Image (tube, rainbow, N blue to C red; front, side, top):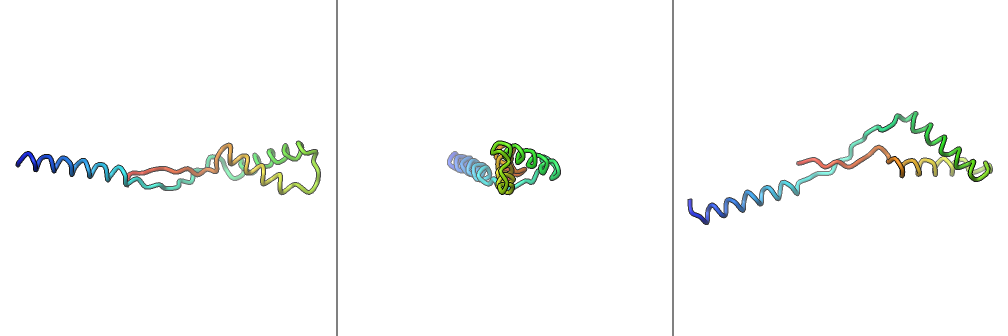
Length: 87
């Protein structure tokens, strides 16, 4: 084998390794960090404190609930995360 053949073979192996490292695939993994019941209770408590902060004025219950869900999801995540796997 000539020196040129050895050099070409080394470059091919390095190129294959680089291509393999770029072949990462993102997948979504659903991980139940808390049960649905626990999440519901946490949202309920957070919505209560939001309502308390504005003096329990009626007519804002749904708004409080949605804001509580959004705040909890922003703080603790939704239970989804991206995981990279070698493909």
